[in-house]
Amino acid sequence: MKLKLRTRLAVAFVIITVVPLALIYAVVAGLSNYQMKSFRKAYNLTEQVNLFSGNSLQIFNRMTQVEQKEIEKILDSSPEKFSDMEYMQKLNEKLSNKYAYMIVRKDDQIVFDGNSHVTQELLDQLPKYEDVDSSIDGAIYLDGDTQHLVKQMDFLYPDEGKGSVFIVSNVDGLLPEIKAMMAEMLLAVILIIVFTDAILMMWVYSSVVHPLGRLQEATKKIRDGNLDFALEVENDDEIGQLCQDFEEMRMRLKENAEEKIQYDKENKELISNISHDLKTPITAIKGYVEGIMDGVASSPEKLDRYIRTIYNKANDMDKLIDELTFYSKIDTNKIPYTFSKINVASYFRDCVDEVGLEMEARNIELGYFNYVDEDVMVIADAEQMRRVINNIVSNSVKYIDKKSGIINIRIKDVGDFIQIEIEDNGKGIAAKDLPNIFDRFYRTDSSRNSSQGGSGIGLSIVKKIIEDHGGRIWATSKEGIGTEIHFVLRKYQEVIAE
Image (cartoon, rainbow, N blue to C red; front, side, top):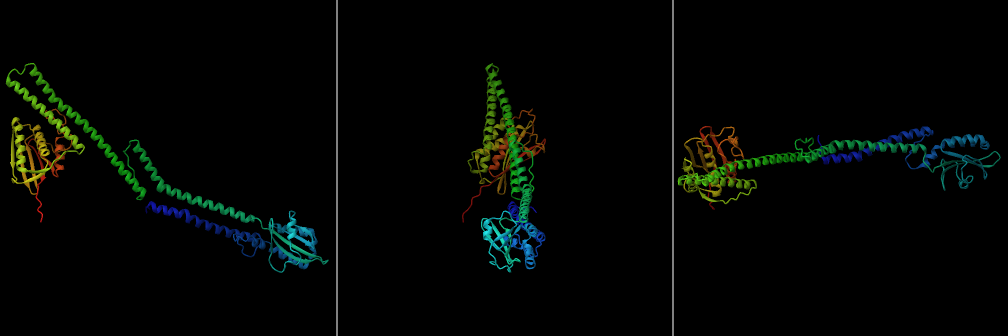
């Protein structure tokens, strides 16, 4: 199951807090239990000892209980032994193993000092004979520059001298066993923290840092201009969504880059087409002008034909430049539309009359068939719709390859729309080319060997205008028979308020 980043952070918080605390508690409990058992065994203790109780006096008190009882027995049976230095030295050695020493006093004189570093301050603080009830199993605490726990056992020497045996434990510091245990626990705590942090870091690296690293590599590739790669999205968390957004951005950048390359290619092609198509009429104009200047047009009829040809060529150049200007407006979405209500029958009749003059000059038969009522209206830009008709007709004229050219324009009523059909008997369009004829710069004749010319943007302009009018356009064609261009416009209908 893939976790969200928020959930992972919550889990990380648990790992870095609760888990170490639980492990530390378990380790401390285990070590303390083990050390207490070892401590009791090492010092021959029968009672439970809590090394972490904070009551070090209790620990030191219990450590010397065995020696205390042994001394009490000897005092009851053989008190004279506390005049024997060798015996007292041996007894003191046992106490030294338990971090204590023995002091023996007779009357007011110290007869044995088990610690050569004992201070006079401590000796002065020792209680007097029978100041402490020796029958009570306990000890007294002496506080000064150093802290001591003192057990006092009073007795009488054989010569009736008053004797006191003191078992003194220095309680200033911790026992070595406790120090060792604390060091072990500290080491265990450090290891637990390091271990849990290492696991957490590995988990965070695999789930957070690793995908961010891949994202960084992808960013460097884009910075270097490399868009031909795919950023795999492994998880569905916030970082996965970030990677997904980054991948979508990369794809868009790649699409934009490809579009720019295509756009640059199309612009170069447009410049090439325009250059070619401008050069042809300019060459013809120069030739006819030179003919007039050289006197080749010797008769008025010939001169008139030269001048008319120059005019036609200049007119072709004007149309070409007009197309180029309009194309620039398409690319910037700044086509100037002026929509108004147009009567379909009268408008298209005027368009056909205007086109008819040129068709007559080209010896092309133009047919017009109107099947809509006289009162049918559409909302359209009259100038731009005239451009549509002229571009489609001009395109048809270019590809008529028969001696008797025919162009038919039909206006039909198709319910909520009117449908305009422009049919020619040209050479037709191959089925593989038909879906692309409305694309910019697409030419069915890519060799440009023919004399048709054209910028290759005429039908793309037509499509743009029709779509901006809310209509659609398509074509049907048969090779060797001809082509039909169809487009539809929505009728204008009055909304009657009730």
